[in-house]
Length: 510
Ligand SMILES: [Zn+2]
Image 1 (tube, protein in one colour):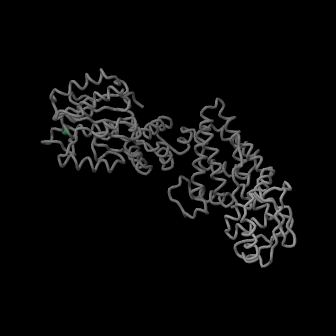
Image 2 (cartoon, protein in one colour):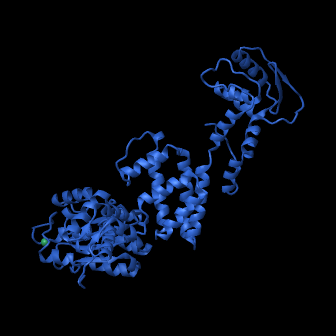
Image 3 (cartoon, rainbow, N blue to C red):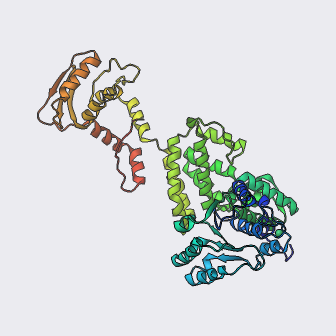
Protein backbone atom coordinates (compact mmCIF):
# COMPACT_ATOMS: atom_id res chain seq x y z
CA UNK A 1 0.00 0.00 0.00
CA UNK A 2 1.40 3.39 -0.94
CA UNK A 3 1.87 6.35 1.38
CA UNK A 4 -0.87 8.34 -0.29
CA UNK A 5 -3.51 5.89 0.86
CA UNK A 6 -6.70 7.79 1.66
CA UNK A 7 -9.07 6.11 4.08
CA UNK A 8 -12.14 4.75 2.30
CA UNK A 9 -14.57 6.89 4.31
CA UNK A 10 -12.91 10.06 3.01
CA UNK A 11 -12.22 8.77 -0.50
CA UNK A 12 -15.84 7.73 -1.01
CA UNK A 13 -17.49 10.57 0.88
CA UNK A 14 -20.81 11.48 -0.80
CA UNK A 15 -20.40 14.57 -2.96
CA UNK A 16 -24.00 15.10 -3.98
CA UNK A 17 -27.49 14.26 -2.75
CA UNK A 18 -27.81 11.29 -5.15
CA UNK A 19 -24.85 9.49 -3.63
CA UNK A 20 -25.89 9.94 0.03
CA UNK A 21 -26.23 6.41 1.41
CA UNK A 22 -29.49 5.29 3.00
CA UNK A 23 -31.05 8.73 3.62
CA UNK A 24 -33.80 8.69 0.99
CA UNK A 25 -36.40 10.68 2.94
CA UNK A 26 -33.98 13.45 3.83
CA UNK A 27 -32.72 13.67 0.25
CA UNK A 28 -36.23 13.89 -1.19
CA UNK A 29 -37.39 16.57 1.27
CA UNK A 30 -34.25 18.66 0.99
CA UNK A 31 -33.98 18.57 -2.82
CA UNK A 32 -37.66 19.42 -3.23
CA UNK A 33 -37.26 22.40 -0.85
CA UNK A 34 -34.20 23.70 -2.72
CA UNK A 35 -35.81 23.24 -6.14
CA UNK A 36 -38.85 25.21 -5.04
CA UNK A 37 -36.77 27.96 -3.49
CA UNK A 38 -37.79 27.28 0.11
CA UNK A 39 -34.48 27.80 1.85
CA UNK A 40 -34.54 27.84 5.66
CA UNK A 41 -32.17 29.99 7.69
CA UNK A 42 -31.20 27.21 10.00
CA UNK A 43 -31.06 23.43 9.68
CA UNK A 44 -30.25 20.82 12.26
CA UNK A 45 -29.11 17.34 11.31
CA UNK A 46 -29.22 14.64 13.95
CA UNK A 47 -28.27 10.96 13.92
CA UNK A 48 -25.67 8.48 15.17
CA UNK A 49 -22.05 8.95 14.11
CA UNK A 50 -21.16 8.15 10.53
CA UNK A 51 -24.59 8.48 8.95
CA UNK A 52 -23.65 11.48 6.81
CA UNK A 53 -24.48 14.62 8.81
CA UNK A 54 -21.35 16.55 7.85
CA UNK A 55 -21.45 15.24 4.28
CA UNK A 56 -25.04 16.44 3.95
CA UNK A 57 -24.08 19.82 5.42
CA UNK A 58 -21.31 20.24 2.83
CA UNK A 59 -23.55 19.13 -0.04
CA UNK A 60 -26.14 21.66 1.13
CA UNK A 61 -23.46 24.39 1.25
CA UNK A 62 -22.49 23.49 -2.33
CA UNK A 63 -26.16 23.48 -3.39
CA UNK A 64 -26.52 27.02 -2.04
CA UNK A 65 -23.33 28.40 -3.56
CA UNK A 66 -22.71 26.47 -6.81
CA UNK A 67 -22.05 28.97 -9.60
CA UNK A 68 -23.01 26.59 -12.41
CA UNK A 69 -26.58 27.58 -11.77
CA UNK A 70 -28.28 30.98 -11.37
CA UNK A 71 -29.50 30.27 -7.88
CA UNK A 72 -29.45 27.48 -5.30
CA UNK A 73 -29.63 24.07 -6.99
CA UNK A 74 -30.33 20.53 -5.78
CA UNK A 75 -27.68 19.30 -8.23
CA UNK A 76 -24.45 21.23 -7.49
CA UNK A 77 -21.97 20.74 -10.34
CA UNK A 78 -19.04 19.68 -8.17
CA UNK A 79 -16.47 21.24 -10.48
CA UNK A 80 -16.92 25.03 -10.18
CA UNK A 81 -14.57 26.94 -7.94
CA UNK A 82 -17.10 27.19 -5.12
CA UNK A 83 -18.03 23.47 -5.23
CA UNK A 84 -14.39 22.39 -5.18
CA UNK A 85 -13.41 24.74 -2.37
CA UNK A 86 -16.36 23.60 -0.23
CA UNK A 87 -15.60 19.91 -0.86
CA UNK A 88 -12.03 20.54 0.28
CA UNK A 89 -13.23 22.46 3.34
CA UNK A 90 -11.45 25.62 2.14
CA UNK A 91 -14.22 27.99 1.05
CA UNK A 92 -13.95 31.44 2.60
CA UNK A 93 -17.73 31.79 3.12
CA UNK A 94 -18.33 28.29 4.45
CA UNK A 95 -17.14 27.96 8.03
CA UNK A 96 -16.95 24.57 9.68
CA UNK A 97 -16.88 24.93 13.44
CA UNK A 98 -16.32 22.06 15.81
CA UNK A 99 -18.45 22.96 18.82
CA UNK A 100 -16.42 20.57 20.99
CA UNK A 101 -13.41 22.91 20.76
CA UNK A 102 -15.36 26.18 20.58
CA UNK A 103 -17.68 25.69 23.53
CA UNK A 104 -17.19 29.14 25.12
CA UNK A 105 -19.27 32.24 24.62
CA UNK A 106 -16.29 34.37 23.49
CA UNK A 107 -15.53 31.98 20.62
CA UNK A 108 -19.16 32.01 19.62
CA UNK A 109 -19.46 35.84 19.76
CA UNK A 110 -16.38 36.23 17.59
CA UNK A 111 -17.77 33.80 15.04
CA UNK A 112 -21.21 35.40 15.09
CA UNK A 113 -19.84 38.97 14.78
CA UNK A 114 -18.66 38.06 11.29
CA UNK A 115 -22.21 37.21 10.17
CA UNK A 116 -22.93 40.91 9.49
CA UNK A 117 -20.46 40.99 6.58
CA UNK A 118 -21.69 39.86 3.19
CA UNK A 119 -20.24 36.70 1.63
CA UNK A 120 -17.13 37.17 -0.48
CA UNK A 121 -17.41 34.53 -3.21
CA UNK A 122 -20.67 32.75 -2.59
CA UNK A 123 -24.35 33.65 -2.37
CA UNK A 124 -24.57 32.70 1.26
CA UNK A 125 -22.33 32.62 4.29
CA UNK A 126 -22.79 29.10 5.64
CA UNK A 127 -21.94 28.20 9.24
CA UNK A 128 -21.66 24.48 9.83
CA UNK A 129 -21.51 23.81 13.58
CA UNK A 130 -20.66 20.19 14.28
CA UNK A 131 -21.53 18.48 17.59
CA UNK A 132 -23.53 21.58 18.49
CA UNK A 133 -24.80 20.00 21.74
CA UNK A 134 -21.31 20.60 23.22
CA UNK A 135 -21.78 24.39 23.33
CA UNK A 136 -22.00 26.04 26.74
CA UNK A 137 -25.29 27.59 27.86
CA UNK A 138 -23.99 31.13 27.24
CA UNK A 139 -22.71 30.16 23.80
CA UNK A 140 -26.15 28.76 22.99
CA UNK A 141 -27.67 32.08 24.11
CA UNK A 142 -25.39 34.04 21.82
CA UNK A 143 -26.29 31.70 18.95
CA UNK A 144 -29.97 32.07 19.74
CA UNK A 145 -29.79 35.88 19.41
CA UNK A 146 -28.40 35.53 15.87
CA UNK A 147 -30.92 32.80 15.01
CA UNK A 148 -33.76 35.08 16.08
CA UNK A 149 -32.85 37.71 13.50
CA UNK A 150 -30.47 36.15 11.01
CA UNK A 151 -29.07 38.36 8.21
CA UNK A 152 -30.59 37.29 4.87
CA UNK A 153 -27.25 36.03 3.53
CA UNK A 154 -26.52 33.69 6.46
CA UNK A 155 -27.44 30.01 6.74
CA UNK A 156 -26.74 27.88 9.82
CA UNK A 157 -26.34 24.13 9.55
CA UNK A 158 -26.10 22.46 12.95
CA UNK A 159 -25.19 18.80 13.39
CA UNK A 160 -25.45 16.69 16.52
CA UNK A 161 -25.33 13.10 17.74
CA UNK A 162 -27.30 14.07 20.86
CA UNK A 163 -30.36 16.14 19.99
CA UNK A 164 -31.72 15.98 23.57
CA UNK A 165 -28.91 18.25 24.74
CA UNK A 166 -29.83 21.00 22.29
CA UNK A 167 -32.10 23.66 23.88
CA UNK A 168 -35.68 23.70 22.62
CA UNK A 169 -35.37 27.43 21.89
CA UNK A 170 -32.66 26.59 19.34
CA UNK A 171 -34.53 23.59 17.92
CA UNK A 172 -37.69 25.59 17.35
CA UNK A 173 -35.79 27.90 15.01
CA UNK A 174 -34.26 25.13 12.91
CA UNK A 175 -35.61 22.81 10.25
CA UNK A 176 -34.84 19.40 11.67
CA UNK A 177 -33.71 16.32 9.74
CA UNK A 178 -33.14 12.93 11.34
CA UNK A 179 -30.50 10.81 9.64
CA UNK A 180 -31.43 7.19 10.10
CA UNK A 181 -29.20 4.20 10.80
CA UNK A 182 -28.28 2.84 7.39
CA UNK A 183 -29.85 -0.62 6.89
CA UNK A 184 -27.60 -3.68 6.61
CA UNK A 185 -28.63 -4.39 3.00
CA UNK A 186 -27.82 -0.82 1.91
CA UNK A 187 -24.43 -0.95 3.63
CA UNK A 188 -23.68 -4.30 1.97
CA UNK A 189 -24.41 -2.90 -1.49
CA UNK A 190 -22.22 0.11 -0.77
CA UNK A 191 -19.30 -1.97 0.56
CA UNK A 192 -19.56 -4.39 -2.38
CA UNK A 193 -19.43 -1.48 -4.81
CA UNK A 194 -16.41 0.07 -3.07
CA UNK A 195 -14.60 -3.28 -3.03
CA UNK A 196 -15.12 -3.49 -6.77
CA UNK A 197 -13.71 0.02 -7.27
CA UNK A 198 -10.73 -0.88 -5.08
CA UNK A 199 -10.17 -4.26 -6.79
CA UNK A 200 -10.55 -6.02 -3.48
CA UNK A 201 -12.18 -9.43 -2.88
CA UNK A 202 -14.94 -9.24 -0.30
CA UNK A 203 -16.96 -12.40 0.29
CA UNK A 204 -20.69 -12.05 0.86
CA UNK A 205 -20.55 -13.46 4.42
CA UNK A 206 -17.63 -11.20 5.31
CA UNK A 207 -19.56 -8.25 3.91
CA UNK A 208 -22.60 -9.21 5.99
CA UNK A 209 -20.50 -9.36 9.17
CA UNK A 210 -18.96 -5.95 8.49
CA UNK A 211 -22.33 -4.40 7.69
CA UNK A 212 -23.85 -5.76 10.91
CA UNK A 213 -20.87 -4.69 13.02
CA UNK A 214 -21.15 -1.18 11.54
CA UNK A 215 -24.52 -0.89 13.28
CA UNK A 216 -25.94 1.62 10.83
CA UNK A 217 -22.85 3.81 10.45
CA UNK A 218 -21.28 4.08 6.99
CA UNK A 219 -18.09 5.51 8.44
CA UNK A 220 -17.65 2.78 11.07
CA UNK A 221 -18.29 0.12 8.43
CA UNK A 222 -15.75 1.61 6.04
CA UNK A 223 -13.08 1.90 8.69
CA UNK A 224 -13.62 -1.80 9.47
CA UNK A 225 -13.33 -2.57 5.76
CA UNK A 226 -10.11 -0.51 5.63
CA UNK A 227 -8.71 -2.54 8.49
CA UNK A 228 -9.79 -5.86 6.95
CA UNK A 229 -8.20 -4.97 3.60
CA UNK A 230 -4.96 -4.00 5.33
CA UNK A 231 -4.87 -7.24 7.35
CA UNK A 232 -5.69 -9.60 4.48
CA UNK A 233 -3.93 -7.87 1.62
CA UNK A 234 -7.21 -7.52 -0.22
CA UNK A 235 -8.76 -10.99 0.20
CA UNK A 236 -11.40 -10.32 2.81
CA UNK A 237 -13.19 -13.49 3.88
CA UNK A 238 -15.42 -14.50 6.76
CA UNK A 239 -12.65 -15.96 8.92
CA UNK A 240 -10.55 -12.81 8.62
CA UNK A 241 -13.42 -10.56 9.64
CA UNK A 242 -14.40 -12.87 12.51
CA UNK A 243 -10.84 -12.76 13.71
CA UNK A 244 -10.67 -9.00 13.35
CA UNK A 245 -13.89 -8.48 15.26
CA UNK A 246 -12.70 -10.99 17.88
CA UNK A 247 -15.96 -12.74 17.34
CA UNK A 248 -16.85 -16.36 17.66
CA UNK A 249 -18.49 -17.93 14.61
CA UNK A 250 -22.33 -17.81 14.86
CA UNK A 251 -22.30 -21.59 14.55
CA UNK A 252 -20.09 -21.71 17.66
CA UNK A 253 -22.55 -19.46 19.50
CA UNK A 254 -25.52 -21.66 18.54
CA UNK A 255 -23.56 -24.70 19.65
CA UNK A 256 -22.61 -23.05 22.95
CA UNK A 257 -26.19 -22.02 23.72
CA UNK A 258 -27.33 -25.57 23.06
CA UNK A 259 -24.81 -26.94 25.56
CA UNK A 260 -25.76 -24.28 28.06
CA UNK A 261 -29.45 -25.04 27.83
CA UNK A 262 -28.91 -28.79 28.01
CA UNK A 263 -27.55 -28.38 31.52
CA UNK A 264 -24.10 -30.00 31.39
CA UNK A 265 -21.94 -27.61 33.43
CA UNK A 266 -18.60 -29.32 32.79
CA UNK A 267 -19.09 -29.37 29.00
CA UNK A 268 -20.30 -25.77 28.94
CA UNK A 269 -17.30 -24.52 30.92
CA UNK A 270 -14.93 -26.53 28.70
CA UNK A 271 -16.54 -24.97 25.62
CA UNK A 272 -16.20 -21.49 27.16
CA UNK A 273 -12.47 -22.21 27.69
CA UNK A 274 -12.13 -23.28 24.08
CA UNK A 275 -13.87 -20.20 22.68
CA UNK A 276 -11.74 -17.98 24.91
CA UNK A 277 -8.51 -19.70 23.89
CA UNK A 278 -9.45 -19.27 20.23
CA UNK A 279 -9.29 -15.53 20.82
CA UNK A 280 -12.92 -14.48 21.07
CA UNK A 281 -13.66 -11.36 23.06
CA UNK A 282 -15.93 -12.46 25.90
CA UNK A 283 -17.96 -9.24 25.95
CA UNK A 284 -18.57 -9.80 22.25
CA UNK A 285 -19.53 -13.42 22.99
CA UNK A 286 -22.05 -12.19 25.56
CA UNK A 287 -23.45 -9.80 22.93
CA UNK A 288 -23.75 -12.74 20.52
CA UNK A 289 -25.46 -14.86 23.19
CA UNK A 290 -27.94 -12.05 23.77
CA UNK A 291 -28.50 -11.85 20.04
CA UNK A 292 -29.14 -15.61 20.03
CA UNK A 293 -31.61 -15.34 22.92
CA UNK A 294 -33.43 -12.48 21.24
CA UNK A 295 -33.84 -14.44 18.00
CA UNK A 296 -34.68 -17.73 19.72
CA UNK A 297 -37.44 -15.85 21.55
CA UNK A 298 -38.76 -14.33 18.35
CA UNK A 299 -38.65 -17.74 16.67
CA UNK A 300 -40.24 -19.56 19.63
CA UNK A 301 -43.14 -21.76 18.47
CA UNK A 302 -45.43 -20.50 21.23
CA UNK A 303 -45.39 -17.01 19.69
CA UNK A 304 -46.54 -18.44 16.32
CA UNK A 305 -44.85 -15.65 14.36
CA UNK A 306 -43.64 -17.97 11.63
CA UNK A 307 -40.39 -17.98 9.70
CA UNK A 308 -38.37 -14.78 9.94
CA UNK A 309 -36.14 -13.88 7.01
CA UNK A 310 -34.12 -11.27 8.87
CA UNK A 311 -32.31 -13.49 11.35
CA UNK A 312 -28.53 -13.37 11.07
CA UNK A 313 -28.42 -17.19 11.06
CA UNK A 314 -28.02 -19.63 8.20
CA UNK A 315 -30.85 -22.03 7.34
CA UNK A 316 -28.95 -24.81 9.08
CA UNK A 317 -28.42 -22.73 12.24
CA UNK A 318 -32.10 -21.72 12.25
CA UNK A 319 -33.09 -25.36 12.13
CA UNK A 320 -30.91 -26.03 15.17
CA UNK A 321 -32.48 -23.12 17.03
CA UNK A 322 -35.93 -24.54 16.26
CA UNK A 323 -34.79 -27.89 17.64
CA UNK A 324 -33.49 -26.25 20.86
CA UNK A 325 -36.71 -24.24 21.15
CA UNK A 326 -38.74 -27.46 21.39
CA UNK A 327 -37.18 -28.07 24.80
CA UNK A 328 -36.99 -24.51 26.11
CA UNK A 329 -39.91 -22.43 27.35
CA UNK A 330 -40.40 -18.77 26.59
CA UNK A 331 -40.21 -18.21 30.32
CA UNK A 332 -36.68 -19.68 30.47
CA UNK A 333 -35.54 -17.57 27.52
CA UNK A 334 -36.79 -14.42 29.14
CA UNK A 335 -35.13 -15.29 32.45
CA UNK A 336 -31.74 -15.99 30.86
CA UNK A 337 -32.11 -12.73 28.94
CA UNK A 338 -32.54 -10.83 32.20
CA UNK A 339 -29.45 -12.42 33.72
CA UNK A 340 -27.42 -11.61 30.59
CA UNK A 341 -28.53 -7.98 30.57
CA UNK A 342 -27.49 -7.67 34.20
CA UNK A 343 -24.11 -9.23 33.36
CA UNK A 344 -23.18 -6.62 30.71
CA UNK A 345 -22.05 -3.89 33.16
CA UNK A 346 -20.50 -6.57 35.39
CA UNK A 347 -18.35 -7.77 32.51
CA UNK A 348 -17.33 -4.23 31.64
CA UNK A 349 -16.32 -3.42 35.21
CA UNK A 350 -14.55 -6.69 35.87
CA UNK A 351 -10.76 -6.85 35.83
CA UNK A 352 -10.95 -10.54 34.99
CA UNK A 353 -13.47 -11.13 32.25
CA UNK A 354 -12.93 -14.87 32.10
CA UNK A 355 -13.83 -15.34 35.77
CA UNK A 356 -16.84 -13.17 35.38
CA UNK A 357 -17.94 -15.07 32.27
CA UNK A 358 -17.53 -18.51 33.91
CA UNK A 359 -19.70 -17.42 36.82
CA UNK A 360 -22.27 -16.15 34.36
CA UNK A 361 -22.28 -19.53 32.61
CA UNK A 362 -22.99 -21.30 35.89
CA UNK A 363 -25.75 -18.85 36.76
CA UNK A 364 -27.37 -19.23 33.34
CA UNK A 365 -27.27 -23.01 33.51
CA UNK A 366 -28.88 -22.95 36.90
CA UNK A 367 -31.72 -20.91 35.49
CA UNK A 368 -32.11 -22.92 32.31
CA UNK A 369 -32.23 -26.06 34.41
CA UNK A 370 -34.75 -24.76 36.88
CA UNK A 371 -38.46 -25.21 36.41
CA UNK A 372 -40.59 -22.14 36.97
CA UNK A 373 -42.64 -21.82 40.15
CA UNK A 374 -45.78 -22.61 38.19
CA UNK A 375 -44.15 -25.82 36.87
CA UNK A 376 -43.40 -26.82 40.45
CA UNK A 377 -46.95 -26.24 41.56
CA UNK A 378 -48.28 -28.24 38.61
CA UNK A 379 -45.94 -31.07 39.52
CA UNK A 380 -47.11 -31.04 43.13
CA UNK A 381 -50.64 -31.36 41.93
CA UNK A 382 -49.78 -34.49 39.96
CA UNK A 383 -47.74 -36.05 42.76
CA UNK A 384 -50.30 -35.47 45.50
CA UNK A 385 -50.75 -38.81 47.31
CA UNK A 386 -54.53 -38.77 47.78
CA UNK A 387 -55.97 -39.28 44.33
CA UNK A 388 -58.18 -36.26 44.27
CA UNK A 389 -59.60 -35.66 40.85
CA UNK A 390 -58.68 -32.01 40.60
CA UNK A 391 -61.57 -29.89 39.56
CA UNK A 392 -60.98 -28.61 36.06
CA UNK A 393 -63.18 -26.45 33.95
CA UNK A 394 -64.39 -29.49 32.00
CA UNK A 395 -66.47 -30.90 34.86
CA UNK A 396 -67.39 -28.09 37.18
CA UNK A 397 -70.64 -29.76 38.25
CA UNK A 398 -69.38 -32.00 41.00
CA UNK A 399 -66.09 -31.11 42.62
CA UNK A 400 -64.99 -33.60 45.24
CA UNK A 401 -63.83 -31.71 48.31
CA UNK A 402 -61.68 -33.49 50.86
CA UNK A 403 -59.07 -30.88 51.75
CA UNK A 404 -58.80 -27.12 52.07
CA UNK A 405 -56.82 -27.06 48.82
CA UNK A 406 -59.60 -28.97 47.02
CA UNK A 407 -62.07 -26.36 48.15
CA UNK A 408 -59.81 -23.49 47.09
CA UNK A 409 -59.29 -25.10 43.67
CA UNK A 410 -63.03 -25.68 43.27
CA UNK A 411 -63.80 -22.03 44.10
CA UNK A 412 -61.14 -20.84 41.73
CA UNK A 413 -62.30 -22.98 38.79
CA UNK A 414 -65.85 -21.79 39.40
CA UNK A 415 -64.50 -18.21 39.24
CA UNK A 416 -65.95 -17.46 42.69
CA UNK A 417 -63.11 -15.02 43.22
CA UNK A 418 -64.52 -13.13 46.20
CA UNK A 419 -65.16 -16.33 48.12
CA UNK A 420 -61.88 -17.82 46.92
CA UNK A 421 -59.80 -14.88 47.99
CA UNK A 422 -61.47 -14.58 51.41
CA UNK A 423 -61.23 -18.31 51.96
CA UNK A 424 -57.55 -18.71 51.05
CA UNK A 425 -56.56 -15.70 53.12
CA UNK A 426 -58.62 -16.00 56.31
CA UNK A 427 -59.93 -19.50 56.85
CA UNK A 428 -58.08 -22.08 58.95
CA UNK A 429 -59.57 -25.49 58.20
CA UNK A 430 -59.30 -27.90 61.14
CA UNK A 431 -61.22 -30.74 59.58
CA UNK A 432 -63.24 -31.79 56.54
CA UNK A 433 -65.14 -35.08 56.77
CA UNK A 434 -68.58 -36.35 55.77
CA UNK A 435 -69.51 -33.06 54.18
CA UNK A 436 -68.82 -31.23 57.42
CA UNK A 437 -66.20 -28.49 57.61
CA UNK A 438 -64.82 -27.23 60.92
CA UNK A 439 -62.98 -23.95 60.58
CA UNK A 440 -61.73 -20.83 62.30
CA UNK A 441 -62.35 -17.49 60.57
CA UNK A 442 -59.56 -14.96 61.13
CA UNK A 443 -61.61 -12.23 59.47
CA UNK A 444 -64.77 -13.13 61.42
CA UNK A 445 -66.97 -12.30 58.43
CA UNK A 446 -70.68 -12.50 59.27
CA UNK A 447 -71.76 -13.56 55.77
CA UNK A 448 -69.00 -15.94 54.83
CA UNK A 449 -70.57 -19.10 56.29
CA UNK A 450 -73.88 -18.57 54.59
CA UNK A 451 -72.33 -17.77 51.21
CA UNK A 452 -70.03 -20.77 51.29
CA UNK A 453 -72.77 -23.22 52.37
CA UNK A 454 -74.99 -21.93 49.61
CA UNK A 455 -72.27 -22.33 47.04
CA UNK A 456 -71.30 -25.83 48.26
CA UNK A 457 -74.90 -27.07 48.31
CA UNK A 458 -75.56 -25.70 44.85
CA UNK A 459 -72.39 -26.97 43.26
CA UNK A 460 -71.35 -30.28 44.82
CA UNK A 461 -74.63 -32.19 44.75
CA UNK A 462 -74.42 -32.78 48.53
CA UNK A 463 -75.64 -30.97 51.60
CA UNK A 464 -72.94 -29.38 53.72
CA UNK A 465 -72.61 -28.40 57.37
CA UNK A 466 -70.19 -25.63 58.33
CA UNK A 467 -68.98 -25.48 61.92
CA UNK A 468 -67.28 -22.25 62.86
CA UNK A 469 -65.01 -22.77 65.87
CA UNK A 470 -64.36 -19.91 68.27
CA UNK A 471 -60.73 -20.55 69.10
CA UNK A 472 -58.01 -20.97 66.47
CA UNK A 473 -56.30 -24.37 66.30
CA UNK A 474 -53.36 -22.61 64.66
CA UNK A 475 -53.97 -24.26 61.30
CA UNK A 476 -52.50 -22.67 58.18
CA UNK A 477 -54.66 -20.89 55.66
CA UNK A 478 -54.41 -22.16 52.07
CA UNK A 479 -52.20 -19.20 51.16
CA UNK A 480 -49.80 -19.91 54.00
CA UNK A 481 -49.69 -23.58 53.12
CA UNK A 482 -48.89 -22.89 49.45
CA UNK A 483 -46.20 -20.41 50.39
CA UNK A 484 -44.45 -22.68 52.87
CA UNK A 485 -44.57 -25.60 50.42
CA UNK A 486 -43.04 -23.43 47.73
CA UNK A 487 -40.27 -22.16 50.01
CA UNK A 488 -39.55 -25.72 51.12
CA UNK A 489 -38.96 -26.76 47.53
CA UNK A 490 -35.17 -27.00 47.05
CA UNK A 491 -35.34 -25.63 43.52
CA UNK A 492 -37.20 -22.53 44.64
CA UNK A 493 -34.77 -22.09 47.52
CA UNK A 494 -31.98 -22.25 44.93
CA UNK A 495 -33.70 -19.70 42.77
CA UNK A 496 -34.15 -17.36 45.70
CA UNK A 497 -30.54 -17.64 46.74
CA UNK A 498 -29.57 -16.16 43.38
CA UNK A 499 -31.22 -12.88 44.17
CA UNK A 500 -30.32 -10.80 47.15
CA UNK A 501 -33.23 -10.10 49.52
CA UNK A 502 -35.58 -12.16 47.36
CA UNK A 503 -39.04 -12.64 48.73
CA UNK A 504 -41.98 -14.58 47.37
CA UNK A 505 -44.68 -11.99 46.89
CA UNK A 506 -47.10 -14.08 44.93
CA UNK A 507 -47.48 -17.49 43.44
CA UNK A 508 -49.17 -17.72 40.11
CA UNK A 509 -50.81 -20.95 39.06
CA UNK A 510 -50.00 -21.31 35.36
ZN1 LIG B 1 -20.66 24.05 -8.63
